[in-house]
Image (cartoon, rainbow, N blue to C red; front, side, top):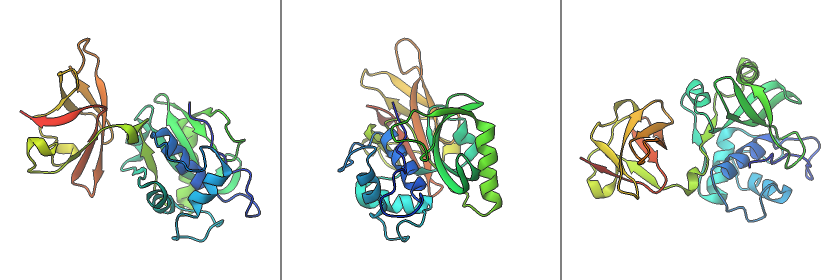
Length: 252
């Protein structure tokens, strides 16, 4: 179970400035990254992560883009940018790295992780609480109001999302015109080719059905008829990344 990777204690500064780094790291843990050289939920790894980027002076706060640079430099991966926050919050079970203003123990800008558990509630992973703490349950409406206060004072409208164990799943990278052996053939999330199929290890065929920018239901992928999850995102507006555990793509 994911627990809080706290920004406390802070050995190298007065006050706490690492909420973004802690929030980003929790997303990497949730996504299945296991490459944390100095350990998960450790001060040493958090401080090393912060110092893996040169986009912003250390101990001065950070933006999501700062976390992207640090993550790529230290681990070779990064969290995905949220395209539509409303759709992101409808993706039950996804971890979303968000920012806001004046709330959750901080009177200024702050970053936290949330995992929607229903249409109205989410788990909150607040870096200002004790390390390894369990998340708290809150209303999504409260989180959105806190985020809106941030937008009103020019906190960037820039968030990140990851699904559980995303980094340990099998990625299929989609581009137009590729052949079966090269992967999935698609254009945009909104224009998924109806001929696309995913082949599961048991030989069952699964056809992606669009239900949003970040998630797909794979129908008829199991003998009992239960849909298997897959996830997609947009890169540059045209390339679709479809991720399905132990699956590969083909066309019919």
